[in-house]
Image (tube, rainbow, N blue to C red):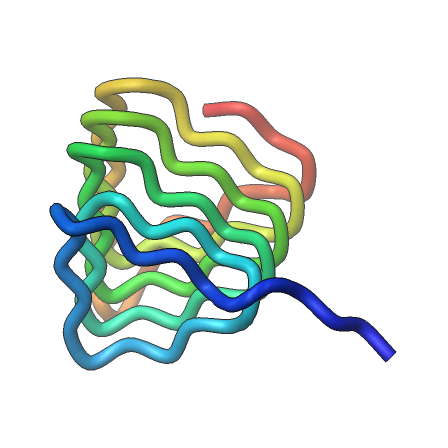
Length: 97
């Protein structure tokens, strides 16, 4: 059995129409996404129409649209990744972008 702390939402976070698992840390903007356990969205980051698997970190200022990340992915500060709703960008397990 896997138990995690509840997801943390900062006062500055914005979350709409998303499914978010336990243990996440949301400080940025999340819209129309699925976030698995222990995903961290840092302050100033924005994700939309994304599926982010376990232990993904989206650093400050990053913008993701139509992106799927596998486990243990880090998206660096101020990176922009934009796929298409029919052809999302897929990031491999353990990658740093």
